[in-house]
Image (cartoon, rainbow, N blue to C red; front, side):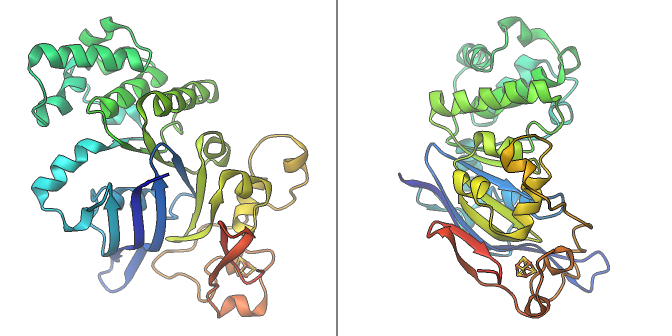
Length: 316
Ligand code: SF4
């Protein structure tokens, strides 16, 4: 497969609120995303996964590192070239209601990206709006309605329709089902899977919910305090989770089954203040397997169950 997106050593640091310290929201992240595949990024709230996704799109300007999209150096692009490239890199947000302008009709919302990128005329844009509504499973009569006339799941279908209107190659989906009921979640996940296959899309799929990520991803990154602590093929991450943080996240999935019944660990405590991360392994204050060296030595990345399955932990 060809890498559509390659990220190397990406850092996004912010000045702390008091102006004195630095928050390392993303701190040296590397990965590749193959065309037509889904990379799941998981971690608790505050782990840096949403900042990572926005940094890749340069919605937040990274501090350093490389981003290559389809062979183009994204960080070197002028504002004009970046705006043109955004046609191929779209985002679906968590809260479809907040991300849809309540004063605009669905037809206007879906035509807007086409107008911004000066694609087609009024008639062809209308035809494209009807086409994307069909692709997400909504009727043509939605065109004249407004966001408040739809359920949460339907609104997220509209958010997805808006994202695919420009025929992008990459969609960043930031917690796209977290605001929805469980029964609706699976419908939206199945829609994303079928659109990936029909339209040849690639996804960066961000979620705090490991069950959701397992359903849709080919490859998974587990983030903690701005860094990747474990990565690998989805089967390896879920069948042989190696980092104690990943093990605790998987154990917390509210689901029965032999694999999950065996899990004992429950994640204790909160994510530490990213302005003052712990020394050594940043997970050590919460880690049930912490050893003396964990409080002072940062763990390098190593192979876990296979060369492609990587983990940053002194146990390996
Ligand atoms: Fe736990 Fe130590 Fe591994 Fe960190 S390096 S996850 S503290 S065992």
